Image (cartoon, rainbow, N blue to C red; front, side, top):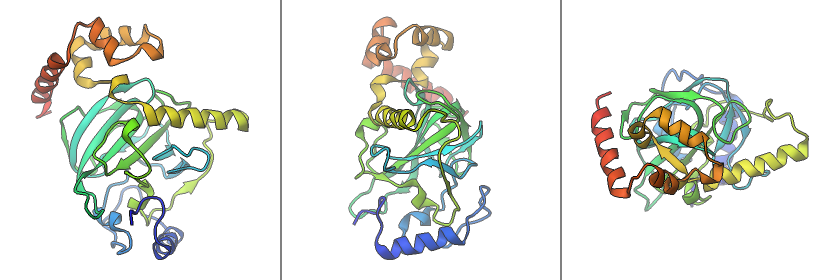
Length: 276
C-alpha cells in the first residue's frame, strides 16, 4: 500500500497520538525515534521553514488538486530538508521564485528506487543555483509572496515520481509532507491574508491550485537562462508580456536561442557555480 495521505488505521492512531503529545521545535535538537508504521520519519528531515501554521493541507477538501501544503509565513528562512542536489532554481508566473531539491533519500515505497523530490514555491529570494549541492538544514532561500500568491507563505510538496513539473504530479506519485514530521505540532487554520468573502476565497483557492498543478518548464525560466541574458534584460522582457505570453517558446524566439544552445548555457552555468 502506498503511504500517501491515507495510512493504515494503526498508523493514523500512532501519528495522531504523536501530534497530540507535542512537536519538536523548528531548530530540531536531534533525531526522533522512527515510527515503524511510518517509514518517512526515519529520514530525519529538517523542517523546511520556521512556521508550523498550515493554511492548506495536502489534498485539501476545498482544493482537491493541491498536492502539497501551504504554510503561512513572513519573510522567513527556507531550509533544505536533506542533503541533495538542486535540480532547478528559477522563476515562473505561477510559482514565482521556486526551487526543486533532489534529495539523497530514496523512496521507501516497494519497487520504487526514485530519489524523493522536494519543491519550494513562492519564495522571495533563491539562495541556491541549479546544479548546486546542498546540505541538510542549509538555508536555500527566503519565503515570500511571488507568483500567483496573495500573501507571504510557502507551498511545499514532495514526490517520489522523479518529477519537478506540477503537470507531472498526481496523488499517486506525491507524498503528504506532514508525514515526514509526525512529532511536530502543526496548527491548522485559514490564512490571515485572505480578506475576500468566503465564495471569493474559495474561487481563489481553486484557481491557485490549478495554476500550481499545471505550471511546468515551458512556463518557467531557469536561473541559467536568466543569467545568460542578464537580469535587467530578462525582467524587462518578462514584465513586458502578458502572463500567457511568458513561455520558453517566446523566450527562445526573442533571444534567438535553441535547445542545443540552452543546454550549453546550462552546462557552463553549473560548472561556473559548482564551487559557490
